[in-house]
Image 1 (cartoon, rainbow, N blue to C red):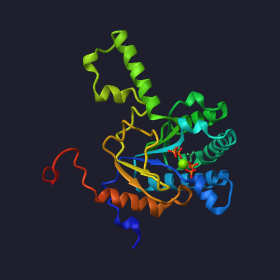
Image 2: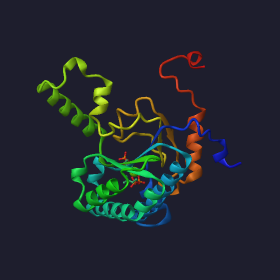
Image 3: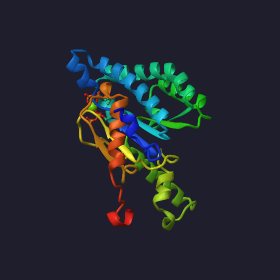
Image 4: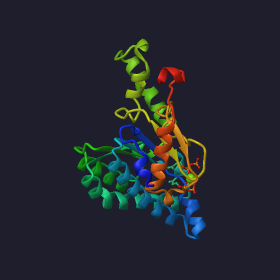
Length: 246
Ligand code: IPE
Ligand code: IPE
Ligand code: MG
């Protein structure tokens, strides 16, 4: 049976986030250099974006480059940046065709000028799209995001723009990079690692977590369907009892 038929499209995660991991190990298994893993990973990115959009997922956030990834060998960082520029330039048409709006979160100032340019161009060209918001986490670290939020909120308190008493969940939300996005419902991590690696710490407070051994370059349509089917079987209780939910 086609897995797609098992998905209830009225009960999709509103916000799906993915830690796309395993490019390097995939390359090693095939006897290739790590760069080939990233190249092939970028094909999975494209496939998964289109699959999500066709399914009707409204928000997709992809962990593309972490603040910690800057510590990789210089040559690997350069390759990753090159692939980013290439795929964004090439795939802008696909985003437009699918009515997808691009968004980027992270310390974007740290990115090379060339990358920033294509990112901002793609954001501008897709700003009126309405079907899905695709957020790329680039030079992203959740702790850095929270530090930033604390600084900005403190500054507003100092200047009497807001009072200490008014600081609550929603004020914090408004000061995160993800201010316009709903909370994450489902977080997928590929490649068999069971960790969060400094991704969306605040936003995944009540997310369902899904881990798969599949390496990112092998992660395709059917793997995504499996993750969503697993999500749809879960009971999200948000602190309540099962009886209260039913
Ligand atoms: C994910 O694959 C891509 C990035 C982190 C940019 P990795 O490059 O981390 O692959 P592994 O974990 O070494 O297999
Ligand atoms: C997390 O993967 C970052 C991205 C997928 C972009 P890593 O491969 O960098 O994570 P760790 O360092 O192994 O936890
Ligand atoms: Mg990794």
